[in-house]
Length: 333
Image (cartoon, rainbow, N blue to C red; front, side):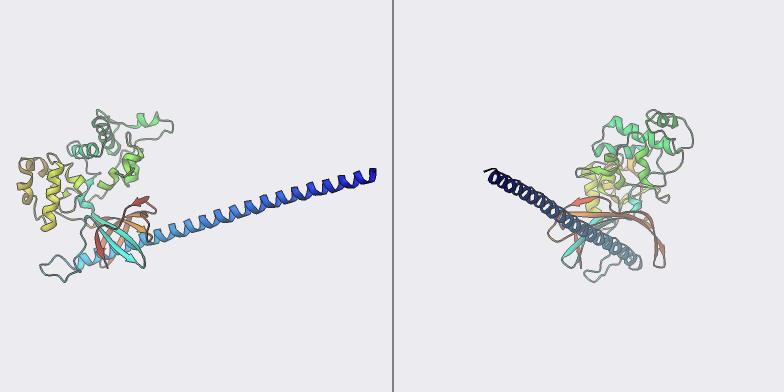
């Protein structure tokens, strides 16, 4: 009898051991399957991200090629259909690569607000831009005064500005630059400028899209300024800005006086800050999209044309964020 009980106990222990081994093996198999699946998804995500990045870079190169073509094929009264140079006022263009596509837009830097040329008078334009983008008037005053203090050579405060003593009081202290801006990304160090104000968020544009550090920009080019910049000019409403864009789409603005009838009495207020001269520096934003996807990966660059088919990058950011959209804009074969 004792032997029978002993045998039954042995069998029970063996059964329990087998069950434990099976549970361990099942856990290992499930964990391995999960890891393989996660690894596969990560690989697919990396592959798609890389493909979008290459598509966006293709858009950058296409934009540079279009700028080169624009330089050797100046405006003319007669053109073969489909050979018109791209616009440099932020118009969206689309190109195809296999089943995938990219979009790109080009803006002449002369159509932006020159950050290094900003002074107490022209600072009003940047204040208007900030307010139009949703920043409060009080914060806009602080930002503009702080920008002017950041780039001047002294330690004297403007009314709402900030100098080294303010920045040294921060948890991570640093000094005011007291020199010109070398890159727009420096703005995130200036009092009052949060990343979402500089770069934008939730579909809202940031001020970085409308500013330039190009030293050659002295006046805002009416032919290439985005509507947001035009609407920030003294006395100019959004409706007036839209009418200026419609006008220049049909004919190039040869001189500021060409739009006097559009803005009326506001012309004398805006005239000191505008012109029609182009620069040789252009900002490009290109976004790569996979077929059937609405989310793309963006690349931003600022290029300077040097002549004889040469150019150089003044700024390059890859990736520059994620964009959402379809395929709007001018189709480029």
